[in-house]
Picture 1 (cartoon, protein in one colour):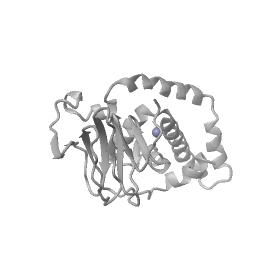
Picture 2 (picture 1 turned 60 degrees about the horizontal axis):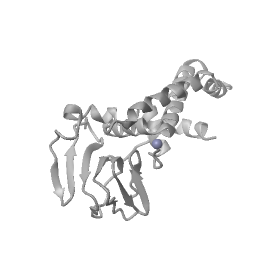
Picture 3 (picture 1 turned 90 degrees about the vertical axis):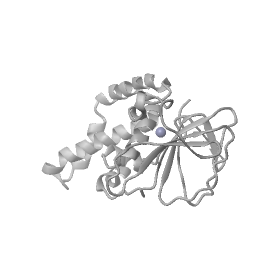
Picture 4 (picture 1 turned 120 degrees about the vertical axis):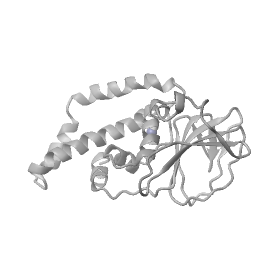
Amino acid sequence: MKASHHPTDDLLLDYGAGNTDEAQSLLIATHLTLCPRCRGVVEKAETLGGALIDAAPATAMAEGALEAVLNRLDEPDDAAAYQEMGSATADADISIPRPLRDYLTGGSTDALSWRRIAPGIQRHTLTVKSEGKTSSAYLLKLAPETVIPHHGHHGEEMTLVLEGGFTDAGQHFIRGDVEQADPAINHQPVIDPDGPCLALVVTDAPLRFTNLLPRLLQPILYR
Ligand SMILES: [Zn+2]
């Protein structure tokens, strides 16, 4: 089943331009292994980003530079590249997608140290670089029918479902889905009754889109 809840396109573009921190990159890379739609967005961003950088020294601001970049998108290699990306989904059936597995001792969640933080809720903090103001990442193991108490947000919070599912604010999230929490919404996920839920959560650093490149790419990608 395909993911139906995705990270924002701003965030995907930032990832494509190399502007996300390690925890954000981990969550997005893990989502991408499960989501052809977002792989397409990131691939376009990377192609456009590289082309803009290539074009910049010689033709910055020049009339026709944008056209040249856009023409590259039409090159026939694109179709082959998409197919190649598609074939990578052979990994998607493995319970823990590769980008996340690389962060786990023994490549599995079994050997991890889990800390019980509330009834039905266990947490394992992942080691990611935290220089300056960057996000943190942790795994949650949630028992069936657990109601996660209402929690406020200091910054942004993203939750990627890896196993099982939950319902929040009237929407259902399953494996591959990303919930990007809106602090304005009363946020109270309820875990599905038919099994436990495993989720990757990235939290706390406000998302910053200070880099010019994603802002430039946004209108080009979605014109
Ligand atoms: Zn997606």
